[in-house]
Image 1 (cartoon, rainbow, N blue to C red):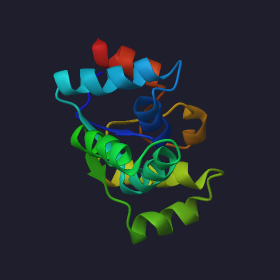
Image 2: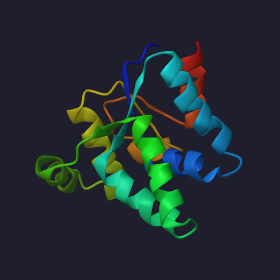
Image 3: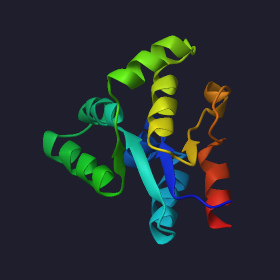
Length: 140
């Protein structure tokens, strides 16, 4: 399977930024292999403020901004706007954040979504992969 644009969810970004074991190596490898294969990794706009808030609990302001800059330079921003929020509300998914990620991916024509919890996207029309499964697909 080939990919041109893939939305990466908040937890994958946090795994990479916080070096959360045992997930960090897979998350970091996704960013590395995607760059090698010219796959655009997209991150929903609302993810950046969530990540900033979480990182700030453990790191200085300088370190937090450094990590946010690194994450931003390794990705593109997938917009979250009023139509996406309105659609997410109408979907009535159990996890509202997953609905926002999904619709952000749809509106930016992503080929896939990568999340540690693919079951949250069982109504997705876009393929959804765990980080490990996506890495396997990406490396083939």
